[in-house]
Length: 217
Image (cartoon, rainbow, N blue to C red; front, side, top):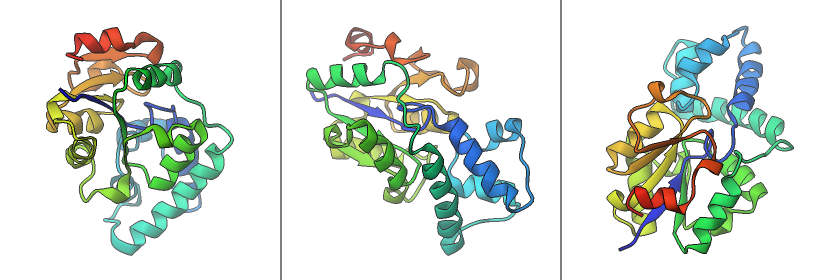
């Protein structure tokens, strides 16, 4: 029976949210907008750029304008984060243990592919993933299950035999909507702020293949 592990990226592989906040603050300051950290917590973390930009700019951002504004903000993020790529504690050890077990792995992120390339490339795990999906690869963003269903198809594993690591409400919902088991990574939210998950971790030192076994692996 084939099984697979799928990771979200922001807040799961790396704790990037503080750097996205910095990038968005710079982006919005140029437009005389100054969202608070509380507003970011409600309307930025785990959300797609189309939602974030539409919310804070107060109108529907779509089409070519969305592509241009997204590129401006994400370029700022990559510039800020390039020298700061650092995985969440224990991630690399856990990831290598999965590889030693021969388990297929994937990344399913709402971020642009260039961000995924920066992070997975810097950590040297890009070539070890059997599925890599970013915002450009889907028509519907989380909480829609498309990115997870496509990941399962690429990994050639039925959704019910996939375990997903997620940190946001929309991400957990997307994985649940896909019929997958979810481990909540509490990097940005508390248990109470997430839909119910099969397990929760603060970092990956709390996770190993024996814990996965309890989830049916």
